[in-house]
Image (cartoon, rainbow, N blue to C red; front, top):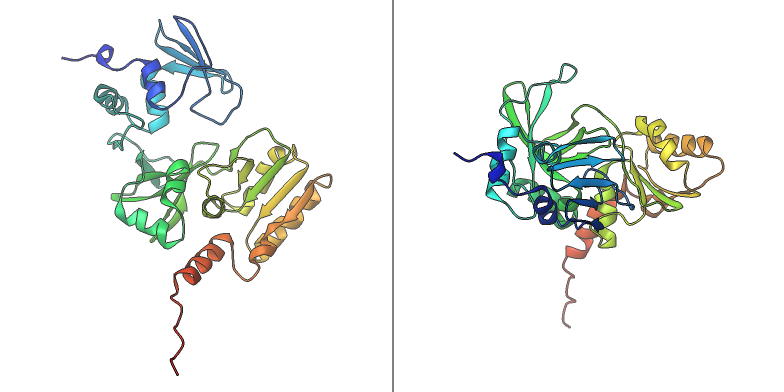
Length: 294
């Protein structure tokens, strides 16, 4: 019978996720954290002991604990995934032992790469490049009571998921913002993650290159203020509705020293950036009528 010692090592696992050590000895390596965005390596790995420690989070553990954290799977599923030695990404693994949170009837069963044709079709229907979504989102399987579902999932900074599908718009607890820290002076602010995906699709980029905050709900603006306050210029991609306008006013009032640019002016004829993207995509697909010959 195989044991966990038959699995790949922690260094090999990180390499297969395309994470290279920035500093390394025979027994120790320093990596960029796979658990968060950072520029200075602070993810320490002891090859000789098979342990990791993220100095930025103040957390550490074994390879199994890292796989469980990154892939949202149980220990048994993490062991099976490691034995398979899957390259690049551990595939979707269900969590049969997952229990519902006391404060939410929705429970996450498992996460993986976006593969279901219905979800890929949903992304294309909304004008989103599936490759862009695949870099930032996951296919999330969840349950409400005894019924099971799946959706596009976008993780927030607290570990909760924003969930979207043709039939569902919701989230799992805890609810929070999502940030991408590139240590710049300029920040981009989006109301929802489909607006971020729309922006990246238009820019032909897989991930944000500038500091970015996604509110995941306008009520989360206070949570984003400490992050946004570090920036001299903020480009706000909010909705063209009353909630979006109030959020813009509150942002300017809370950060009087920052230059807040209302980027919604560029899509004022539409509800939000994603609707603008879909509209332009429809126009580009509409065939031109040929003139009648005389």
